[in-house]
Length: 172
Image (cartoon, rainbow, N blue to C red):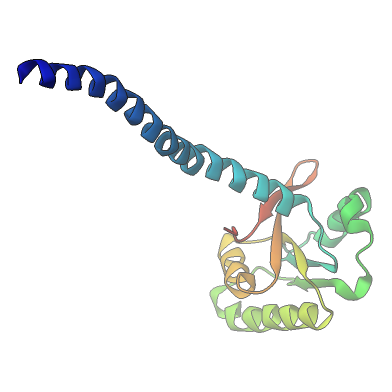
C-alpha cells in the first residue's frame, strides 16, 4: 500500500505543480490588468480628452481680476491653438467683474454663471474650454455648475499663456 501511495504521489506532485502554475497565470494576468492596465487606460483617456476639442467647442472666460483684460490674453492663446481657432463668436462667453468679488456678490455671480451655461448649451456646445482668472472659490462654483453638463476642459494661466490641465471631470 505504501508503494502504491508513493507512486501515486510521485505522479501527482508534478501534476499539482503544473496545475498550480497554470491557475496562477490568469490570476497574475488579471491582477496586472487591474493594477497597471487600468491606470494606463485612464492616462490615455485623460490625454485624449484633454486634446480633443469636441465637435462643437465653446469657450468660457471667467475674468474676475479688476484692472486686467484676460479676454485679450485668451484670444491671443486661442489664435495659436489649432483646436480653439475655429470656435465661433456666439460660442465664446465672458463672465467678468470690474471690481473685486466679495461674498455679497456671489448670488449675482451664480446667476451670471447659470446664464452663461444656458447660453453655451443653447448654442449646442459639447465641450467647454474654461479659462479662469480670479478667486479659487469662484472656480469651485464653476465646477459645481458645469460638472454634470458637457465636457469641460480647464486651462490655467501661466507666465507664457495658458496650459491645458485636462477635463474637469474624469470619465471611467
